[in-house]
Image 1: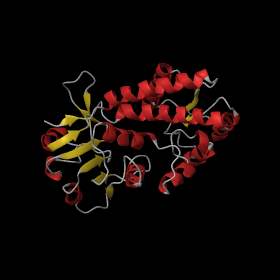
Image 2 (image 1 turned 45 degrees about the vertical axis):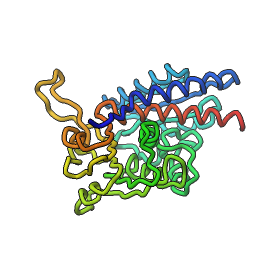
Image 3 (image 1 turned 90 degrees about the horizontal axis):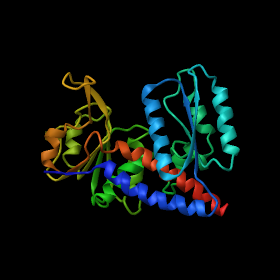
Image 4 (image 1 turned 180 degrees about the vertical axis):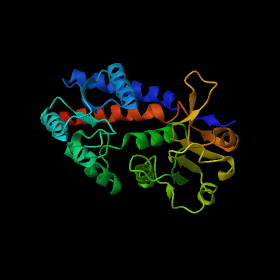
Length: 293
């Protein structure tokens, strides 16, 4: 029976640490502040932003969400970002993705001050990660690293195979885990849609990180005994036995892989809860910096 690496449990540990840090900041006259911009009516985005607000409330972070209609001009969003960039009480800025199709996502994300880019998507922060001098780590990859470390599965010296090469998960977690740093120092292989035989690589992996966006990509015959598996995927599949008519599954066929694994993250309850927690961590980090400026 594999150990379950539950992100929701690790989230609680980190939140307790952050509460103490926020209290210390407030005692020095600094309240961490996060501004969120939400454009349009995407239901998943609204749920996600609401959960961010709840996390801020739990931790004592001052959060405000600006909701804008779908047809808002890009210039309006850029004006807001500029305003938040100049406000010393705003330590973190987050523009919820996806944006409406008429907006240039790159223009919007690049407009955020890198020192307030708590999502870690600005090219300055991506570049700093690449050269081994990171400031803000992107939230989901940072959460994956914490899950490995805090579950006793240090990636140092291990062969980590990442399946997926997105800018949000695959590429940054590869960069994080290959660094010459504590909690990293892994040998990293990336597989993707151009890989002829993904199983050839995953069967050699000590740690598999699945971030493909397709349910059941990693099957039992694709992993070795004793593997550690982090399943990043959250996919809806039809299930008439459920009240909502669907259930959530990961990119890993859990029932096949779990019996062979030393440890595995479940879906839901695995990586998902960590993303918002690491956003909170970045916001607190940004607020701390103001003490020395």
